[in-house]
Image (cartoon, rainbow, N blue to C red; front, side, top):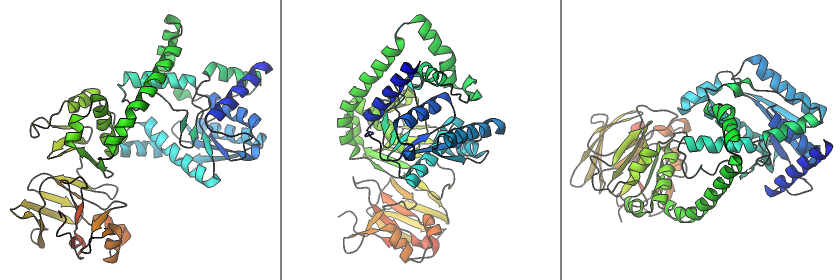
Length: 458
């Protein structure tokens, strides 16, 4: 058995090297440890490979399961690290915090837990100046993920499975099976904790783990190697296609809640590029939205010839549409949240803003704006539909009378508008040009001066 332990640790050391870790390890390396077999095995192997002074452990208690279980997991990890002389920190998410996050992100509990967990990881990496952060995803996790994404109709971006390296995050167990992991621990009489939610087959991953994988193994010898080989081929193809895809990204314009690309560039692109562009634009406005492939396929068939009837789709709080010279993705908003607002204005209408209303009207000279039923009226010459009315975002710039680009946040601050209030100031962003310039700052909404670019078209 000791030969197995030695080979196991040699494999982990080799995979750490493949992930970019230099030996001997002289930089801090972090590990996320839950107390399960995977993470305890990885921690044990790394303790036998690296000097313990460089090992930093973080364990996150999501407080989703009963308190007795979650506290027991955290205590087990902390005690195991203390016994072995390794630094360990326990981070507790407030009970109900994951559920609240899921509601806010309009997603599931599992996705929200992951989101919060990685926020903790990022802070831990910065605090301890870690060169790498190890997670304990293994070969079985990879197979489960690939089957999940296949069954869910994954995008080209995710079809290749879990990556062994993503920035500072590395996964040295990806080629190691769960059976090997448990055998490694048993050979050293090391126990581990079991998360009972892993047996809850209401979750797709657990159904695949409990039913699909065993069935495949009983019926199709070598199926797992075939799936992993197919994922590797798909990844290689995706790398090649992405060389050309990246060229198209240069013409994408986006904010946190809005993204667009030149219509003709999209329509003339090959289907493999179109699919990526649709997923990319939607991901820009709502990262946790799962997009049915039938919707992506429908958008890829757009020609831009029937913008009123056909070239607009709404789903899951998102609208994708063609207008003028752009394919656009926008989040559908009914109110203001997170101190951000954005509205695509396509016709004469009354637009709600945080401090009241803006009425828009198209004239021969441009768009006339009327604030709060006549409180103030002004015209932006040359502007036409569609355009954006939105709040300020980091890195926003606007043209000055001296033809220099000025920082919008600084202009707002110079108007004596408090930092906490600046999001209430409406900006107007044109959508006709490739640059999609900001052409106005309506300080009048807060009783301050306006900044309107008079010759933005030149």
